[in-house]
Length: 576
Ligand SMILES: Cc1cc2nc3c(=O)[nH]c(=O)nc-3n(C[C@H](O)[C@H](O)[C@H](O)COP(=O)(O)OP(=O)(O)OC[C@H]3O[C@@H](n4cnc5c(N)ncnc54)[C@H](O)[C@@H]3O)c2cc1C
Ligand SMILES: Cc1ncc(C[n+]2csc(CCOP(=O)(O)OP(=O)(O)O)c2C)c(N)n1
Ligand SMILES: [Mg+2]
Image 1 (cartoon, helix red, strand yellow):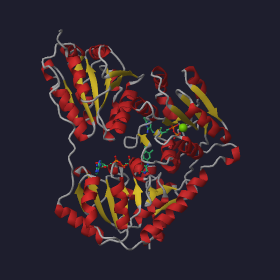
Image 2 (cartoon, rainbow, N blue to C red; image 1 turned 90 degrees about the horizontal axis):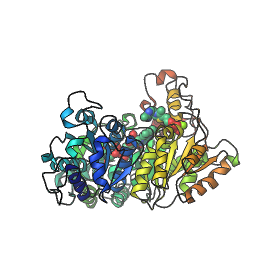
Image 3 (cartoon, rainbow, N blue to C red; image 1 turned 90 degrees about the vertical axis):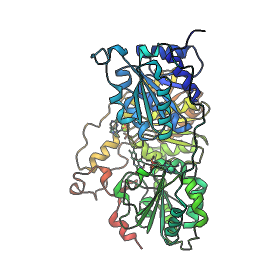
Image 4 (tube, rainbow, N blue to C red; image 1 turned 120 degrees about the vertical axis):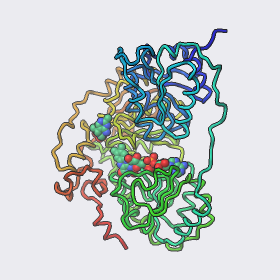
C-alpha cells in the first residue's frame, strides 16, 4: 500500500475528531488537502465563494453542534480572507480550526509570491497558531491545535506549506483516542455556603443571565422561584433563557427592553450568571454584585463585583439550590413583571401590518417570521437593525436557535452563518434576517445556496440605507451621511442565481410571500421594502449629552417608538 502523505494524515486526524466537512476556497497551496479529500468520504469539501463565508459558516456549525468545525484558505490572500470570520468565531468562543495554507516552505522569508506570515496574522484571533514545517509535526501539532480550540472554546490555526502537505507522513495515524472530557466545575463548599448566605439575606434580587446558562434552564427557573427574582437576559443568552420562563423581564442594553433595564437598576443584589454583557453603563451602581462564570478571567470585567465565583452554571446551581431559603418578599418580582407586561405590549403594538398600507414596519416582518417559522427553526440575523428585530420579536422555545455576530459585531454574518447552519442541519428550516447592506457585502455566496442546494430562506430588510449607522449618527448629533444605498432589484438577482425571488412592497404582501418562501422546496429570497427610520433618536438627547459618546455609551434604552428614552433619571423615580 502506498504511504500516506501529510495531507491524508491531517484528514484522517480530523475525521477521527468527528469533523464532517471543511469549508473553504481551493488554491494551489491547498491542492494536497483538496486532492486527498477527493479520494475519501470524510471530511467533505464544502466549496463556498469567499473565505470569510467559510469561517462564519464553520463558526455557525460549531455554535449549533458544540463540536469542532473547520475552514481553510489558500496561502496569502486566501487565508487573509478568513480573518474577519475567524475573529467572530474566536470572540464568540466557538471551537473552530482554520487551515491556513502557506507558500512553499523553502521560499518562506524571501518575499515570495503571496507570502504572508500566518503565525503573526492570526495571533490575535486564535488561542494557538503554529506552522507545520516538517512531516514529523503531523499529527501532533494538529492535535494540540484541536485541543486548544475545544478546551479553550475558540479558534486554533495551523499554517501548512503546500509542499509539506504532499510529503510522506512519518506517523501512522492519530495519537489521541479519548472522548472530549466533561469536567464538572463549581465553587468550593465554603464558597457555596457564603454565596447561599449572601442570597438568603437579600430580598430584591435580579438575575442577569447569559449564554453561559445554556443547558441550565431548569436550575435557573428553580433559582428564580426561590429568590423571587426577575430574570434579565443578555443577547447571547436569549436562546437559552427566555422561553418557558415566568420570571422573564426581557433583555437589557440599548436595544433591550426598558423593563430589563429597570429590573437591573432597581435591585439590591444583582446575580450575574454566565454573562459577559459588555455595556458598563447599564449596571447598577449601588447594588451588591455577585458573578458566577466558568472562566475566572471574566469576573469583574464589566462592573464592580462583590462576590465572584468560578463555576459552570448548572453544576453550581445544583450545589446551591438546596441551601437557599424561600424568599417571601415578592414586591421586586411583581413590579418587574408588571413593567415587562407593559413594555412587551408597547413593543407588540408596533409590529402591525398598518391596515395593509405602506410603509412596512420591519417589526411586523419579524413578527410574521416568528409566527410562520417552524418549532425548531434556526435564525441568523445581520448586525444592523435586523439584530434589534430578532432580539425583540423572535420567540425562542428551547428548540429554535438564534445566531448573530453579537460579540465581534461584523456586518454580513447572517447569510454565511445560515449556510453553516443549513449544511449542519439539512432537515431544519434556516432563516437569514439580512440587512440590505450586510447582504450585499457577501452576496457572492448566494451562489453557494444554489451550488449545494441549500434551502436557506433569505429575508432582506430593504431600507436602502445603513440604517443602524444612521441611528448612531443621529445619536451623536451629526447629520446622516454616507449611508444611502442605491440598491438593485434583489429579487431579480436571486432569480438569476437560481433561487425563488419575491418582493413585498406592501404590508399585506408580507405574510403570503414569507409563507410561500418558507414552503418553497429550495433556496428563496424575499426582499421586503421596510421603512427606513423606524427608531428615530428621541429629542431628549442633546448634542451636548451625546458629544464624544457613541450610542452604546449613552445610558439609555431605545423604547422602540423613538419618542422616549428610559434613562437613569427616570429609573431613579421608579426606585422604591
Ligand atoms: C448591533 C448590536 C447591538 C447589541 N445590543 C445589545 C443590547 O442592547 N443588549 C445585549 O444584551 N446585547 C447586545 N448586543 C450583544 C452584545 O454585544 C453581547 O454579545 C451580549 O450582550 C453578550 O451576551 P452574553 O453575556 O449572553 O454572552 P457572552 O458574551 O458569550 O458571555 C457568556 C459568558 O458565559 C461564560 N460561560 C460560558 N459557559 C459557561 C458555563 N457553562 N457556566 C458559566 N459560565 C459560562 C463565558 O465565559 C462568558 O463570560 C448587541 C450586539 C450587536 C451586534
Ligand atoms: C464589516 C463591518 N463594516 C461596518 C460596520 C458598521 N456598521 C454597523 S451596522 C451597519 C449598517 C448595516 O446596514 P444594513 O445591513 O443595511 O442593516 P440596517 O441597519 O440598514 O438594517 C454598519 C455599516 C460593521 N459593523 N461591520
Ligand atoms: Mg439597510
